[in-house]
Length: 471
Image 1 (tube, rainbow, N blue to C red):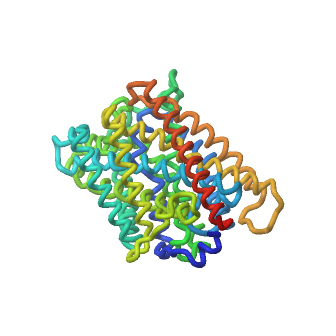
Image 2 (spheres, rainbow, N blue to C red; image 1 turned 90 degrees about the vertical axis):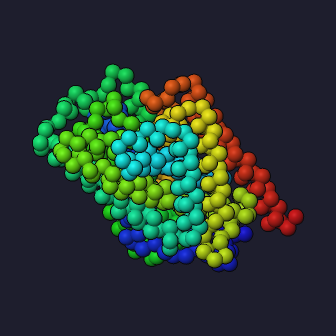
């Protein structure tokens, strides 16, 4: 079926997202407090990495999203853009990596949810987050709930995203506010030496990849392009607001975490609540920990919902294009959502989590899933930035938003930074106990998922070509 045929006669998704829905979606998708502890654990040098990433990766990402969404509007985002600029296989590979990375990333969000939510139960329950049986059970329960809500439709699911955005803002405000009070009352033990590059920068290298990963998300709304009301009008302002808010929040929360807790004592799952508990105890408002954990839990649920909903649109579009099984292109007859893609996402995620729990603890499982997610997530950004370079060096067709100079600078900056971020993700984080098995997981996982992309594309591509030829 041609793209035009799909647009005119295929299943249609409902336009449910307005401008402020998009801003909330960007904030909850980009500003993920769950990655801050694993980054802050590497010390003050990470603040410089945040600034480098914001300038050389995040700003070009905004340019790329607005330029490509303007030129190629519609459902699919990174899948559609790479397909239009580089061809069908590259579009499929871009979309495939964007989708499969979320099969690992969304479970890390569920693990983080459990690590935070146990504080809502009161003091003495924190150790539950290290209990494998409890962690798996609670994560699966939330996962099933989010899948069900998103099957019910973005009209329902978007409220989880919106509540998550509000929860994120409140949680960040409380964290930063406590940090300011601590600084004014007691000063800080953080010195200039904490912001220097350490003698052994191995663990810091991994955090740069995670930082770039933490800054993705501006493209998420365009993945749901057919579900945005007046996208030409609403998307640019939402990108600007969402980007600025997310960047400021990341820097402030990382600095606050460094002030509140020694980098050697930061837990990758509980670091944020850990910091709030420490500061609240010294200030004399320890009662705030439980409601803070509840608000942060709502925020985390919103993060999981946003990425689950957005990434499921990729196999939906690929199913319609006949590069994946056609049943992935089905929409729910009542709710108008890609329910088959959502269910498949959930099933594969559960299997991957179970596989990792067989060989490690909760925090190591979190870090391994996150690192492979970083590599796969950044592959579509290679295509995004390369697309800007191709547009900048091609003939001016008068269809773009930005000049060739802006496209060239953004494309080159973003492409180089993305390549570096992918490379350093293969350096193990400090939570990894076996470097050999980590590298086997990273290299083997990358090769496996890219190999599967080629398999599905060429197998189903032949069937599509045969069908088009009437064979």
